[in-house]
Length: 374
Image (cartoon, rainbow, N blue to C red):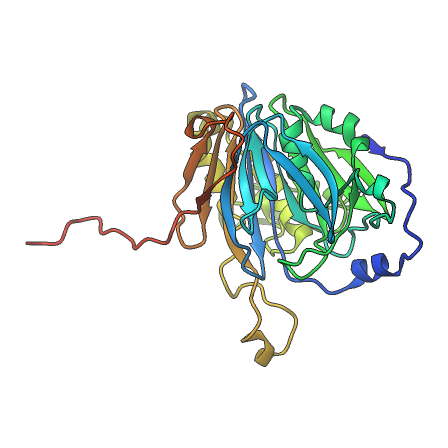
């Protein structure tokens, strides 16, 4: 049974109307999927896809130890801290804010969209209380730059107060929940619900989007019949019938891009991976699994009229990332360039105190297999 640890209820700001309006408002499409693969000797790889309807400017952020962070609560200064641990990850809008990453102890994780269910505590009017408040976009990088394990995160969550704030770059209050995995193999999910922080141990390692994590774990029971083994010949009314082809044991596994279906599909894939193949080449196996969640442009579209669709961005896989927790290498590939590119902690000075950015792989033309004839 999943262990659920919930903090004491936060005192909500007296004007809760804004919070409820945020929870119920329509949101952009999103379809992020994350999971961990483990070899038989417990070497782990974490991966996730990043889907969104709007283009999210992203670079690889290289954050050294000693970097000084400052979280903004709307137009006010909130929680400030100095990072103790170097971090590599996906930074958005040329800022230290990360939606995915890994630190030098292997702690890895991401922020995934959580529309319709995220319910943050509102910012306080008290300057003293605001000094403890951290916004939802900075929350992930605080954890990655401060802690080595998910257990450390769980026992230190009361050091900050997670609040929902307007994020001008996205023109919204981003609804997020978080997945974290450490080098020892422990995983947690953190979700802001009704002004509380809920923390769940996650033995499945999978996280997608809404509904909440507890709902997804109950939904697994609807798919207990699935098996990687093909169904044999069956006799019905005296007639012997055989399946049409391979994969009959997995007949019924959901293939659509909704969050509940992606959760089940990811769980089915990572729980049936051939361990011997995974041991041979972890990165290749990880990429094959991750590719199952690619969304090309046009496959997922907003629920609006055809005329409006021409002006509205469609959901697609902007980039995918893999964290090699054993070797501390962070890989990323983009929609336009599907070759993985890696960055390690040996590639920059982790003690410099200076934040660095690296551009994502640029598009490149396909190279011919054979050179042109002379």
